[in-house]
Image (cartoon, rainbow, N blue to C red; front, side, top):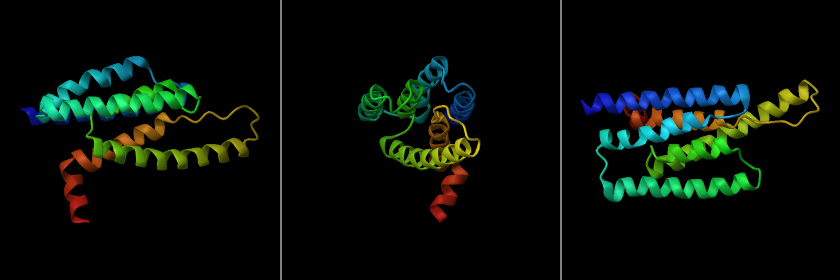
Length: 162
């Protein structure tokens, strides 16, 4: 029963990440209600995953607080959007610290590719307005990547075989 809930919650998170990416592309915003829904799903995921209050859940909360502090600092310097900060913070509630580091690396690589593609597109269209990168796409890609690699049983077996 808890496996069904566990995978159902992961599917819901994956859908939420796709919605976040598309809304960021369309409006350059990630809705607070979406980040709130992802945050509210985390305690259910902890329960379904069998995490202990100490140290597992405490570690999840600590990483989320640290992520918020770091990314809010980037937001203060206008290097990151507020929705992106909140999305990364709520994702830290879902994945272990090691997996969160994987997410950050994949997100950074995807963000670099996205930025280069957007600059090329912007230049090719000879647009003069300021370029706005929908970084929620890179965050969602990183989140979906770590979910697929670390939480899907078939993907885990393939990754271990390689």
